[in-house]
Length: 153
Length: 153
DNA sequence: AAGTCTCGTAACTACAAAAGTTACATGAAA
DNA sequence: TTTCATGTAACTTTTGTAGTTACGAGACTT
Image (cartoon, rainbow over all chains, first blue to last red; front, side):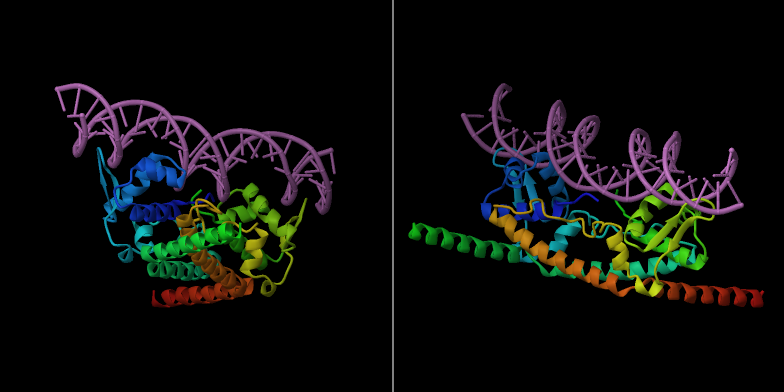
């Protein structure tokens, strides 16, 4: 199956928005994400409906984060995106009459339910503020290394 | 396509083969799986290369399970199928320069690695013999209920 | 009021992967 | 030699993400 980068792209966009201070236009976000402004609007539409961001038209308009970074988990975003398929390996028949197939489905369903529960739990634990903090650490490291290199040279 | 039912279909096919005693043709398997014989051959090709099944042409030919049910795990089959994508949610960029994107990728990579490890572990634990045993239980239950209904009527 | 900016959306294309289908070659058994 | 069954190539169908073009609808600026 082809890959789905909407969750990753959305997180990327939201963190940039949080850092920006004022509304970011779809064009600006599209530059950050190396994609198309229409794709940004399309993806953000779900987040707006979920109340995670607001959008304003006209001069000075764009996208603004509507909630505190600490109050939004990856689970919230996954939901707002319409719960894209996490596990594409699904049974051929949902409710088969064949007892062999029932046994197969039962084993796979159990496993996938467990994996999905794990993913949901992790998504629920990770908040945007965690990602922002990790970003800040990376920034500090980056600055440190740049300084070190500069001193050495 | 949204779903990938190859693992489920293959398990279904292998269990029928185990029960059948003699080689099963692609047509017979296609009937069981409600699909096309060419799809069966295509899917089984990987299992043959992995040594899990053998195929014979001509009269009395077909597909035969090459190994003991207890010696084959779902992990073996998943591998033989060419390791289809388990988790389609992937980062937009593999090795991004943007530190925000790095932080995002790090969080998601960790989570998906964990989920994938869980799936691999479960797949490794489940053997064809387990599914066959579950099938037998279902058969017994089924016969019991049929008998009960018959007695009641 | 005119002009410009920006979102909102429809419609279309591009691309990828699974699955279905047709056609035919290859080899084995009756 | 006929029939059966796999092996495979080639094409179509289906479904979903993503990219693109085009244009309408507000909102701010001058």
